[in-house]
Structure formats: structure tokens, C-alpha cells
Length: 212
Ligand code: GRF
Image (cartoon, rainbow, N blue to C red; front, side, top):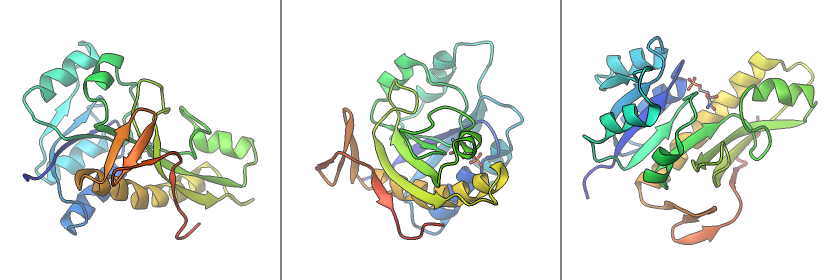
């Protein structure tokens, strides 16, 4: 079988992209990154991609999002679309076309705190735990089946910055793992659930190896 082909969509810093590239270099994930696409021309993630000689595209803000994405993707046979801090909501028709092939990382323990400002909302609610979730993307915002989650403990000294850092360190573990499972054919979406090695799983896999 040829190497799975991926594209990565992002809007900002790109630390998850960098981590995925590193995991690829280490041989942990066996796939090609055919392109990095951003809606933000100033995204640092684009610079990271360029340094690695990965093709980059900036979405034309004057065009409809699905039109721009389809123009880029039509030329490629893509196996997996990886959202890594992409701040635009993907259009319904696009999500339907690539159903079961789009993964996202979200900075909360879904289904809690869908949407933005998750660290702030966790602090305001005085939650004891926070974390990150990898899920398949469906037409419901941050609502697709959750594959794997990692938890962190929130302590009284935490603020938005410390939570962001702790959550990122969780993301760097669980996202490459889910991507690896996907490209190795272990993971598939099945409506509101997912299959792991052909077995239907109803709740997220918990990465409990080290609660930080
Ligand atoms: C991550 O926290 C991810 O969960 C969210 O956007 C952030 C992207 O961070 N979707 P980075 O650009 O990869 O550093």
C-alpha cells in the first residue's frame, strides 16, 4: 500500500503541526504531508511548513471556503485531513464530502466546552480537570465522535497561559497517536461512533498514562 497522504489546516502558531512533523521524522507516523493550508496569511504554521519544504496554500478570503478548499484538494488524492488549530468552521458540504477522513484536536474534555476560550471557561467554572480531545469532524461543531482524550489537573495557581501550556503537552501525545492509528487503518468513523481495529467503541479512549 502506498503511503497515506494528508493535508493539515491551521490558522496560527502551528505547534501541533511541528509536533506531527517531528513524529513523522521519528518514524512514529508513516504518512506524507502533501500540503499545509491556512486561512491566515500570517500564520506561523505556514513558516514551519515552508522550512520543511511542504507545499503551502493560503485560502482566498474573497472566495467561499468550500470552493477554495475544493480547488486545492481536487488535485490531490487525500486520505486524511488534519485540523491543527484551524479557526474557521468547515462548510457542511465539505465535511460531508470528506466524511470520516477529517480529524480535529480540541482543547477541552469534550463534550464539555465546545467552541472557543476553553481555558478561560474552565477557570471560571473552577473545574478540577481539563484536557484535550481528538475527534472525527462532523457537521456538528466539535460534536463528532471523540477518539482519545488526555486529562490534566487544574490547580489554584493555574491561569489561561499555564493551562494552555499543559493542554498543549497533552495534545502533543494524543494527536500523533490518533493520526498513527488512522493511517495504519486501525481507526474508522462509524456514524456517531468509531471503530478501533474493527470493534465499535462508544466512549473516548482515555490517555491516563500520566495525568499532569
Ligand atoms: C490547540 O490548542 C488546539 O487544540 C486548538 O488550537 C490550538 C492550536 O495550537 N484547536 P497550535 O497552533 O498547534 O500551537
